[in-house]
Length: 166
Image 1 (cartoon, one colour):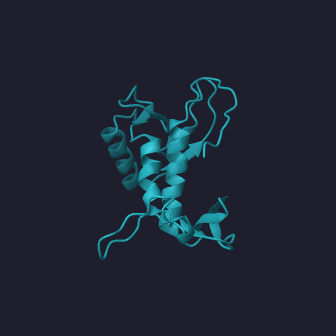
Image 2 (cartoon, one colour):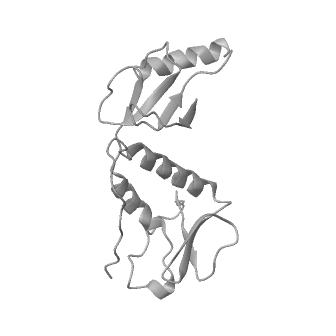
Image 3 (spheres, helix red, strand yellow):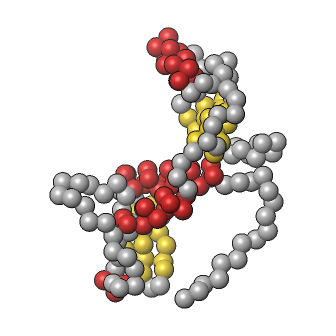
């Protein structure tokens, strides 16, 4: 099982789900048949377009419907460490019950991080995902995947201009 990114000019799909491998064992073939059956996929195909839709269109596509990307980003924002200097200017993060672990952490500090997977400077503070934080890296990568999935490339839009308001 794999995901590939490719640009299909006819459908504007970028993500392809690959369910086959060369010379699979009988056990792997049975699992592939079962996945095809559960997802109502055409078992003769090896590649399926992944689309953002509430229902399946045909046996050559896998349709996913999630919360909006904006809703997911809002939920994730509770796992961003708010610097002390920003107290009162930002909503504090989630308080977890004892024994609970954060599924996603964005660290913050005044200096550019040395080991980061992703980092951004905002209002004289750095925010980053540590390169050794595998759970956060997975969540961040999944969000990039979902953003790509929900990106509508069927319309040609002009440049986007961001204007700060405060």
